[in-house]
Image (tube, rainbow, N blue to C red):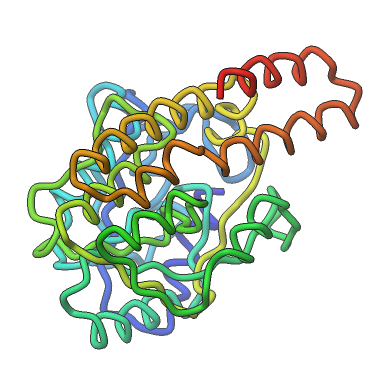
Length: 294
């Protein structure tokens, strides 16, 4: 997946980009840790990159953490260490479509004061083939093609269903300032970040371009957090926090939306129905107990 990710950057129709690779494996050698034709077990990541991509130029740099810092801290490093004014945090199991940089460049020209831009996605499976996902289909229903999110109305729309695929976001470092991802979260850190931007009167611009390939697979953090219920535990805690914060700001509509937690209820019911259809009664039972807490 990493090789496909890197090649997707090299296939961009524009060449005015820089790529910073941050290895958070916590291994000084930078080993990826899983053996296959494209993912080495003992070969250092930097050497592996050079062997697979001998023509890489000075637009590409590599940094390895001495220890595993986790997702939020690594994403914060991406923002801190990037040498460009606008930054996309590309996930290593995803791919950019060839028009991504061009779409963002055109978006920057139209919305230079936006805190971040985001685009629409193509959902792919482990093999890179386009696939169907009910959750992403639903997000498509509630997300307009072109969209500006700001203030209470923007917050309310996101709380009804977070239709922003977080790795599509291209952040404006000048506007976001010192805002960073909160390391206490593992699943909702992107929604927490974007809602804090809206609460601080910054705004986001959604583009109609389909420019990112988001990979759904069982080994992803999202899949793991769905099954061990961490996702839902975090979402419930986060929505309670936002209800309190919005209420203190006098944003009553956003407060009501957060309190209802409608999207969490719908997602749990969908997961329960899916588990039952697969005769996974114990998994369905655990999710039902979480649903009853709402």
